[in-house]
Image (cartoon, rainbow, N blue to C red):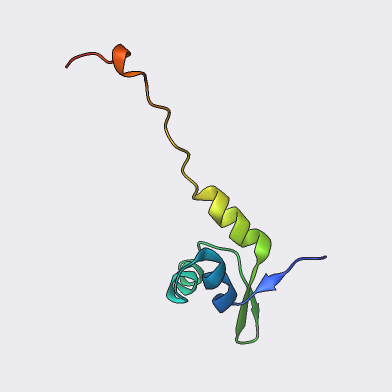
Length: 70
């Protein structure tokens, strides 16, 4: 088990957000976390999964000449 566990500050820095955002993810149970007493740790793999699940791929646009008039 070579998993890296991050605290809330580290997750916020990794995501480029304030500390409030990962805390909200934990409160709403939208990300996997581990509770060690009163300390909360988030597996690095859970952060990667969260990013992958919320990544939106760009839509390929059709060539302008093929569009139909409404």
